[in-house]
Length: 264
Ligand SMILES: C[S@@+](CC[C@H](N)C(=O)[O-])C[C@H]1O[C@@H](n2cnc3c(N)ncnc32)[C@H](O)[C@@H]1O
Image 1: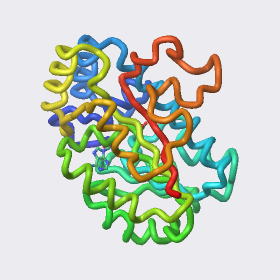
Image 2: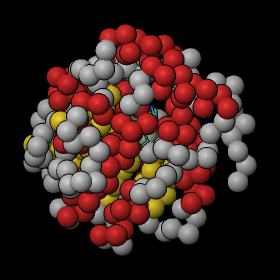
Image 3: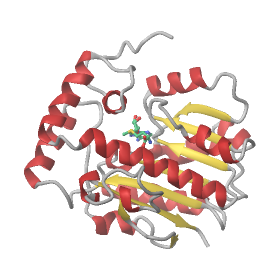
Image 4: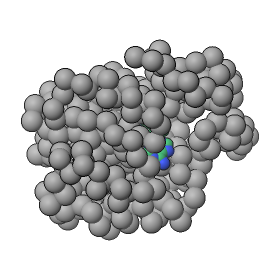
């Protein structure tokens, strides 16, 4: 597969790939990523706690009978992607990956070419209606039945609060009873204000500015839904499976609040 030609600015999807040990990144991404790590050395491990949360959440959802997943801001494919985890429990599960970054989508399409039940499409969460009306979404997701919508480590890339509110209510309206909303979101409640300012400054020079939010604002995204236990918590604390969970004893180092809400 051809690599991405659009390399004039660091791209957070590729920085994330670098931190997770992937190869779909360039010098400019690695320089920005290393700069961010010099501000907060916890970042790479924090993102692993995010991936662990994603795995646990998808496992939980399949155990609840969920067999359709809409993963928005899915990123560059990496180990334990949603379809891999979901298909371990239910080989018939349908998965639509959506990302704003054409490179992430191209890699997704590449690894999914043999798949009939999982697909990657390009889309912007801000245009959630277009994601829903996309022919591949319509082929694989039936919104009349329970669906899981995953917004994992991505809403902090939508800095406009009003835009986030609008999209979240559209998403909740689209879900039938028994559907789930999964969110992980960078928070300003841990790490120092200076670290947050410096990280924000680094991301402002990438293709996607970042905005961490306090726990109260992240928790409010679930208003109207029934939160699954243990509620909105730091990533390592959400239904931990045991010793494989990183930072169980220092959960705030994950810098991410997570939660799963059910529409009743
Ligand atoms: C940090 S990665 C998270 C990947 C994956 N969800 C995970 O948690 O491992 C964030 C992803 O969100 C994507 N993204 C950012 N803004 C977006 C938007 N407005 N609509 C869709 N995707 C977006 C980025 O391109 C990137 O791939």
